[in-house]
Amino acid sequence: MSRKEGVVKSLKPVSGYGFIETGFGADVFFHESALGKARFNSLKVGQPLEFEIKVTYKGLEAININPLIESSTLRLYNKEYGLFESSKETVENKIIFVRLPVVSQWFKTIEEAETDARQFALKLGANALLCKQRQKDQRKSDHNNYIYHVHRITAQACLVAKKDLQGNFSKADLEAQALAMENTLEQFKGEYKTKMGRSIYDSADMTSEKVSQTGAITFGAVFFIIIMIFISTGIA
Image (cartoon, rainbow, N blue to C red):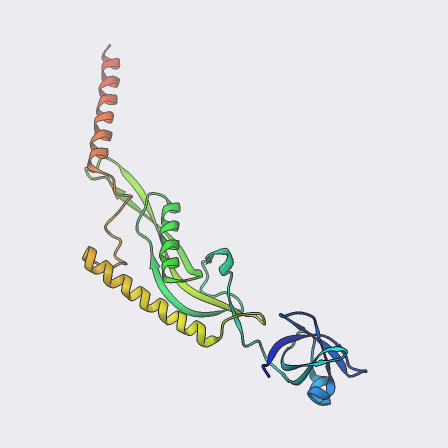
């Protein structure tokens, strides 16, 4: 007989019975005899329980009950809504199974950097970005015609879970998933090193944010024309 988990929904201490709320259907009745009077009296509403189900003519009844300190099943935190993002190192009352460093490339806008960091984390299989920080730097165009700013994101790609009676993962499941994420990162790093000749975290070389030589020349030409018009107007 498979064991189930639930939480104490209500208690009737005088009558010696209560009801268990489960994640699989109707509430389940239980009697103090299923775990002993002393342990029954120590129960509190909301306490997790492990038990077996017996079908009676009155409905479902829990037998062979053991109180639990906390649920043994886990659910990925906020996964259905995409990445959970925070500048903090931890998430309250949640378990973090892995932390992998994420660094975006430098971009002209913070939105592009945010997108780059999120895509990196999702490729690794993360469901959270923690320790998220924005960085801003000042750059010069190819011909030093003007100065502009660029942005990047540093963070930790994490696998975060919470205790949940209706969860469908065990600790071993998520530890295996965390190991797979680490292996994926190592594979990405190796492929990037082979292709680019540098570390995936070395974002000193700019990508889409780099100002082209043509753009710098065009800017200089326009600036020169404006100055000449100004001088001609002054002479006239």
